[in-house]
Length: 421
Ligand SMILES: NC(=O)c1ccc[n+]([C@@H]2O[C@H](COP(=O)([O-])OP(=O)(O)OC[C@H]3O[C@@H](n4cnc5c(N)ncnc54)[C@H](O)[C@@H]3O)[C@@H](O)[C@H]2O)c1
Ligand SMILES: *[C@@H]1O[C@H](CO)[C@@H](O)[C@H](O)[C@H]1NC(C)=O
Ligand SMILES: *[C@@H]1O[C@H](CO)[C@@H](O)[C@H](O)[C@H]1NC(C)=O
Ligand SMILES: *[C@@H]1O[C@H](CO)[C@@H](O)[C@H](O)[C@H]1NC(C)=O
Image (tube, rainbow, N blue to C red; front, side, top):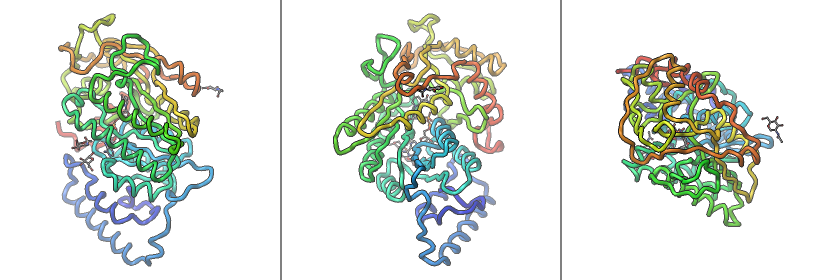
C-alpha cells in the first residue's frame, strides 16, 4: 500500500514488508533531498511507535481488500503504474470496480498512482502494493492476503528494440513473470485473466489485415516472449481443472491519453532511445531532442515508411472492461484490438506537427533491426463478439489530447525541479 505519507486515513496497518518497500519509493535517479529524507524517517518512526502501541487484535483487522464482497469485482492490475495499466485502473475505478495495483515501479510512475489515489481516496477502492512479479513468494503472499476476482496482467517490458539487445530481460519479465502470476492464480483459485498481448506476436504476416487466425511467427524477442506467455496461458486454460475465463487482447500501437488530462504516458528518460513514435514526436516538439529519427524509408509501403495501426488508449481500456464483463469460465477469447486502418510514419508525423503546432525536424535513417513494414488489424471479431469499436480514430485528435498532458508535464510525473537537461 502507499499510505500515510500524506496523513490519509489508513485502510489497515501496513505489514512489515511494506516498510522496506516504502523506503525505496524514490528511484535512484531522483533522490529526495536531505530534508525530505529526515521527514520520511521521522514519519516511519512515528508509524512504528503507533503500530507497536496498538493492541495486537486491532492490528489483525482484515483489510476490505481481503474479503470477497457480493456485487463488487476486485481486479488485480499488474503494471498499473505504467502507461496503459494506469489508464485501465482509472477506468475500472470509474466503473466501480475495486482495484489493487501491483507494480515494482521499475518502469512505471508513482505519480500516476498518486493521481489515482487522490481521485479515489474512499476506503476499499484502490490499493497499491509495490512488489516484483519476478518474486514468487511476494506474489503468493499478495494473492493470499487479497481476495481477487480477476487479474489484468499488464506488467512487462515492452520495447521491440530493447528486446533485440537484451533478450533475457524480455523472457524473464514477460514469459517467466506471467508463469508466476498464473501459478498464483491457480493456487488461490482466481479464475479470470485478461492478458495484454501484442500484434508483435504475428511477426510479419504476408496477408493484411491481421485476423486472430493469422499464423503467429514473431520475429523479435519481445513478440516471442509474449507468444510464449500466450501459449502457457492457453495450455493451462485447456486443462479441465483450471476452469479459467481467459481473454487475450493483442494490441496494436497504443497512443493518446486520458481526455480529461489526469494521466499521460511518461516513460523513463533512459528509455527514450527505445521509445515509441508518439513519445519521440512530443520530445522533439518540446525541444528535448533535436528532431525525429525515422528508421527506414525504403520499406515496401506507399510512402516507404512503416505502416502501423494506432489505437487510442481510451478505446483500448474500454476493450479490457468489455472483455472482463464478457469473460466466461471454461472459455478463451482472443481478440485483436486495433482500428483496422494503417497509417504511415509520415502521416503520423504530419498529424503530430499539426497537434503540437511545431514544425518538427525529421531525419531518415536505415531500418531498425526487428521492425516490420506493415501491420494493421482486422477488428471484426472484437466488434462482433464484444460489441467493441474504436471511437477515437482521428490521429490528430488523439495526439492533441496527449500533447496537452505532455506540455503540462514536461518532466512527466516528476516534480518540475527534477528536470535537469
Ligand atoms: N504500449 C504499446 O503500444 C503496447 C502495445 C502492445 C502491447 N502492450 C503491452 O501492454 C502492457 C503495458 O504496456 P505499457 O506501454 O503500459 O508499458 P509500461 O512500461 O508503461 O508499463 C509496464 C509496467 O509494468 C511494471 N513492471 C514491469 N516489470 C515488473 C515486475 N517484474 N514487477 C512488477 N511490475 C513490473 C513497470 O514498472 C510498469 O509500470 C505490456 O504488457 C505491453 O507488452 C503495449
Ligand atoms: C523490479 O523488478 C526487477 C526484476 O524484474 C528487479 O531487478 C528490480 O530491482 C526491481 N526494482 C524495484 C525498484 O523494485
Ligand atoms: C527483468 O529481468 C532482468 C533479469 O533478466 C532483471 O535484471 C531486470 O531488472 C528485470 N526488470 C526489468 C524491469 O527489466
Ligand atoms: C453495442 O454498443 C452500442 C454503443 O457502443 C450500444 O448502443 C448497443 O446497445 C450495444 N449493443 C449490444 C447488443 O450490447
